[in-house]
Amino acid sequence: MLQQTTVAAVRGRFERFLARFPDLPALARAREESVLAAWSGLGYYARARNLHRAARMMLREHEGLVPRDPADLRRLPGFGDYTAAAVACLAFGSREPAADANVTRVLSRLFAMRGIAGRKNHRAAVDRQARRLLSSGPPERLTAALMDLGQLVCLPRLPLCNVCPLAEGCAARRRGSPDGYPRRGRKPRPVEVFLAAASVRRRERTLLLRRRARLLDRLWEFPCAEGRSPLAARRRLAEELRPHGLVLEDRPPGKARHTVVNRRIRIEVFPASPDSRRTIPDFLFPDARWFTRRQLDRAAIPTLTRKVARAAGFL
Picture 1 (tube, rainbow, N blue to C red):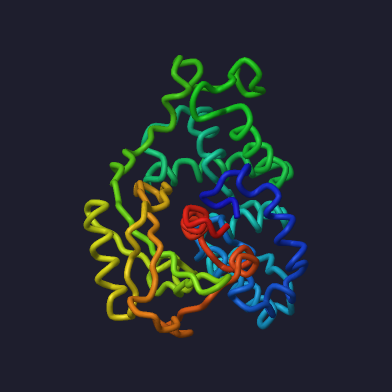
Picture 2: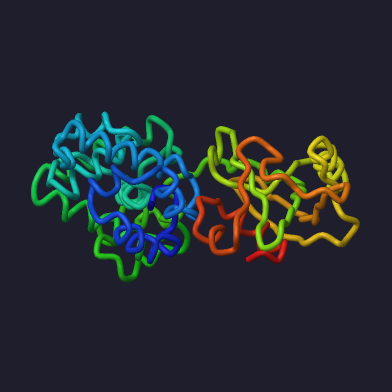
């Protein structure tokens, strides 16, 4: 959960997730949609799918136990070098360096390492220093301490050097520029995206479609379309709805905003209704489902869908 997500966002969600799936067998035997619903709102849903697949693999191949060997951990779905090292070190005391962003920042400053964070040469330099530090003493305690130090004291900007226990030995501090380490790569330019969404109601239910795409695959979303302008997005949505007997109503839309990585999404939500007096059929689209408010609140939906639902007055 903490991969690419802040502690503030995860706090509370972790405990609810464990209450729903208290052990590996419970997680492994759950339906994927139940796992995605419990993960809903945290983003990067491939993590939830990989966690689910890893639980099934551990139940099938490791007698329901988390393997201790880093090599076995790396074979689990979603377990790259860092995750495998972190589990091996923090859970089992292996001397595998687990350098997250916090550890990378602390070591980069402590040894005044040049290079850009995330680049191959810089990662290798951090790995070498971490291995040297882990060569004696309890590795899990040292790794956890470095993580906490980076999160609470050695901050990305304006580090609290006056209370840092490593301040005297910090090479970056001696050079007078601790916040210059490590160097950061350029962030991608923000891209403005316009999204039009349709709120289709049938009595106390709203229509959602199961997404088929690399991102947010198999999660639920409102019928929607993107465009280079609000008008272009609305026209494209109207064209996609027309073959299904739906038209966008001429009423002021609900509005919302959403950000995904460098995409700044401006959302307009339009009521939609049949273009005749006929009843809306159960299946207007492939992979369509009608949701009540309660079902939607508990469904596997991304944050974007929740924002659209609120803009439509459905949540």
